[in-house]
Length: 322
Ligand code: UT7
Image 1: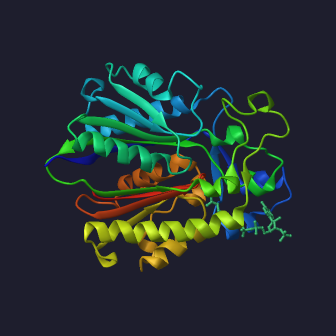
Image 2: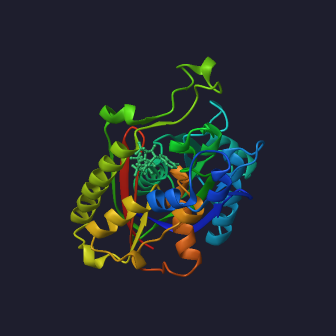
């Protein structure tokens, strides 16, 4: 039996940091409101001329170095992102070329904040099927470029960044169980109103902003994430008590606390980056994973549950041994 295993991680965060105090100068908000309602204290914001692939390349270099792999070793590139550089060519082909990775399977997928979980699950299937041996898998976002900085409902929430992992074939897991879900009936609760084939001409005008009914998103997120975590553990025959760490999507500290409670996990067993990164959409899980590994909390052999929830809605979880 062939499994897949994460053998290296990396992250990149843009230089510019925006604090809650900075946002107080732009919109009618307060540090106190943002901290208590979301857990965010600061977020990184990409430069005007910086693209999602630029950030991916930096994160990927760190992950490749960590894994001890060269560009020639990689035979698959997948990026989970809602904010690719261009409509085409695909962002993964840009990354593949700029990193000097020889021609291989390279594509991106868009599942909003669940993009990395979908990408990792896809790469795991390719490796298990024997179609790939060493995948570069990323979650990355220049989400602040979609933000209306006069809308306090959304501008305080998000940040930019990129996370990368190297996923290799292995004779032991590694990735144990992946679960994905989606339900388009919720599409109006969280969306961006412009795309390649809809309203493109209006993009960038005053009407352009992320549309979110935060309260309702919150409720469905807690419900669906709870369900999928239970399904994932059940499927793998693992109990909550056996989990060493939760590496959640970092949308809101209160959603994360609700998940930890449901899993009977103390917050000391949860990797938190929401205070420093904000909600970086598809980048949040791989960056949190990298933070936990690099500061020595996540150790080889430990059992880790990763989960995410995003627009669509989409949701997913991955159970793995490091
Ligand atoms: O990553 C993808 C998935 N996304 C999520 O999971 C996001 C889920 N939702 C949330 O995280 C929360 O719903 C938010 C953080 C977005 C909002 O928190 P909330 O506790 O649900 O607040 P609310 O939307 O119910 O708004 C409460 C009040 C409102 O004022 P009134 O109507 O009660 O007078 C808002 O206008 O807070 C007001 N408000 C703000 N006040 C100060 C909204 N944004 C702000 C702000 N500063 N930035």
